[in-house]
Length: 537
Image (cartoon, rainbow, N blue to C red):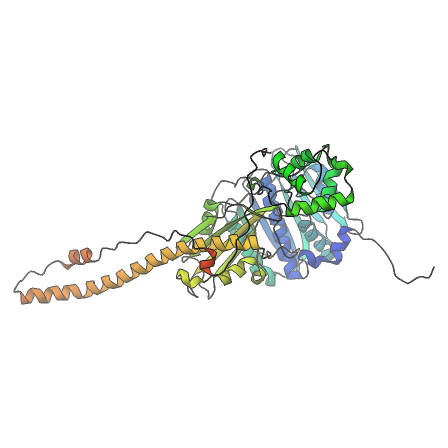
């Protein structure tokens, strides 16, 4: 057989991401430093919230030498159990975030990519100190990543008694970075994280010793998300195959009810009729053609109940408003939460807000704060669906003009945020998302319009008041002289009675239709939820 000179080989996941680290946001020293801070802070927040602890997170960046920095992140979360320490920090795509529920991270990738980047740029190991919440010991570990084999290499392992019953994790490693370029992005990220997690105490120390300390403004965590089965809409053939391999059911009705979210017997039978499949069909006996037919049918069937919002954990109107007020101290703020919606079987909730005046900077265009599963999105704003909606809304209809100090807030939570890239910096412009973001921002704009109208009325009355205050005493003096009276009447009481300001408290309550706004001509299709026989999970 003739040889072609072509070499075939397989590489590990760690080796793949080492060769293609730009996919995960480590394409240059500036972006790598920012991404490392972001990934570790998000992991710490998840670790605290998973345990029901109010997060206290301390981030410190120290300069070791020219372009070498030591990053240290300490939290009070649940810690990492002893048996999972090495793979959790030394094996790419190993983690605890593969359940079907809302989470900041999804792949067990970001934090370990930061450690890998540090290793390949400085050759320094990762230092881990973890106090698992359910164990009596504190573990201190030094480790490296074996990139070719995608496994951890232990350098040092120590164990000591946890006498104070502390819990949490401290990570420290050295990496190459560009602090001068990354500084404003990292500080923006920390500030916006404090805004979207007002229940967290965040402290960040710059290399020169400058401290940014954001105290928690509320001592209450939002309700945690509840893991549920996947929704049938959006299920592919591979997912179906895996469910069938693990199922213990013996007929298709029970299979659909057991393995899918919010499927009752009535809906299951209706679906099986549409694809001409017997109710008694054993799922383990299905053939490849049957799986293709089921997957296609799941996608087009229009009687699935919408996903249950229990799987999501939005911040909530009160907490989001508190976060905005504590960070920007605006003159006016209005926040709204849209009803749960879904795309492709993935539930999502959109929260929107508008802030005006106070500490909101004055810029030619509206400032946009974007969040996905309580993660601030700092880069690529122009490509994001929120920026697209903000550019499309006719703000002049709401008395909003260029140059006014206005900030828009869009927070999306979902079991699967539709990011356009693996870097997780901007959200795709799906129709369902566009609709909810647009409606949420327009509701906030109507409330802001009422505030601006009242403010303009007060300003007009103040101008009138200044005219009265200036000329009434003169008029009263001259009229008194003409009338031959020595005593000049008190003009203050007269001015007050003439200038009683009655502010219009009414805000336009009617929500204009999308057609009236001129920016949306169709609404997402309604989902039939008439299945009265659905069993609660």
